[in-house]
Image (cartoon, rainbow, N blue to C red; front, side, top):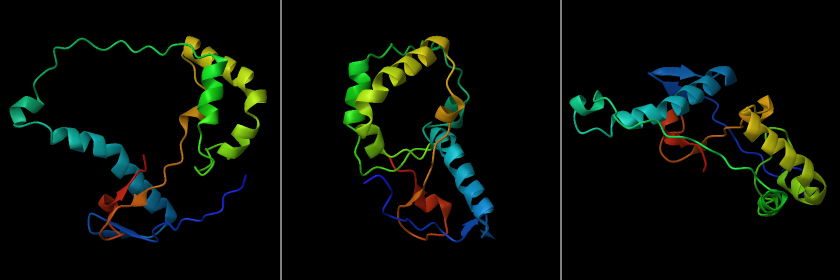
Length: 149
């Protein structure tokens, strides 16, 4: 199947700071704010005392390196994709990628390695569809929603 078959329902309103939000724009911004701040909020809770929170780090910054990929790696990763997963931001289904795998692997490998070497990544690779899933409790509370892993 190339086209999606399921339609998920999104909340029609949420409550943030005792304020009821019902426009799609306000709801999307509420979820965005929630998910971009949740990491720092969790980090704050990891410290045993307020003194430790302000303690400067003495570790040197980590060196981050991504090795070049080869065509076999790209082919294998595309082959492992589940056709039941959601479309990407580009609206290309995993099934379509798998069908075109042998044809697109050389070009895709070249683009990936060029990006890794230059440190420049296409703007379209920087976008993501974030679709929150309801965990439990009141559906109008953004804290009761999560991003699927």
